[in-house]
Image 1 (cartoon, protein in one colour):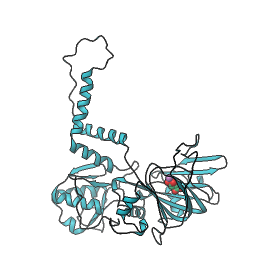
Image 2 (image 1 turned 45 degrees about the horizontal axis):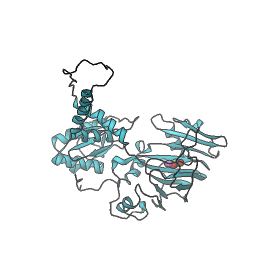
Image 3 (image 1 turned 180 degrees about the vertical axis):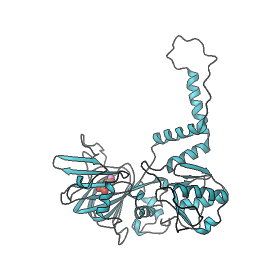
Length: 387
Ligand code: SIN
Ligand code: CO
């Protein structure tokens, strides 16, 4: 298969695959991926030594008031759990001293450069798998209850303390009549108290329950995504069919008169199978559709068009931009472009490093420059220094 190029600059912010890193408790990314990724949890003490929270409690609460931001308020009381979807006015949050509540804010990396920069440390996992940074704030005893997630997650403690209880739960039955997914019979196997800078990696489906200890507890969840086979197939087929634009009609000149008019004609079934096979035979179309689907911006995300004129120079991708590539194409924010030779090398460097220095831009072909200009004007990338 295709080998990603060796670019002159390392991928932005991500640790080199074979260098041991405190982020992974002294393991190199390669060791971590072999031993833990999708396999078993890893508790990492002081994963980010001297870690400073990326935003204040007030800033997080302010984010939750924004319509463009996905947020939830979860309150645990003697009578049970309540869940409220954002946007959440400050007045709708309980007092800080009230125990047992938590506010969760999704996709913080899309709104805050520092959160986006934190995610870059996890780019030893392909971008196609990285999802977002969720930040939770909890009062004393707050949490979302025992549950499991379908995706890998790194749980980084940012402020205060959280006690995580985790286990390989066999019985995944959920409590009925609760607005959250809460396990009926959680059987924890391990317990860990996390302090600021500590981090816990959990593979998909590991049951976990994290309770804030003593209030002012914030946890950053570095979350991953994985396409679901059926859903992905549907999205790809739709895109490929739109692209193919094949208006060939089913014809049945040999159709005899039938005594069973409701019966599906076998020839029509064969026509349907042939239509799908023709679609799937378009390998380039499949590659484009996959790249477009995987780089599609999240709902509620829009870009601010550039207000200043384009002048070539050093560039960086906007934090909201998703950019990937394969052997023949580059994909950016749901669009695909064919690229080969020096242009492909440049675009791959842009995707891996999430930026280009002025020398790289200086060597760009006219075609590549035209694309960079389009993307600049759309607000998908920015100049790193004023023109
Ligand atoms: C939390 O931060 O309280 C919840 C994170 C999780 O369990 O995935
Ligand atoms: Co979870």
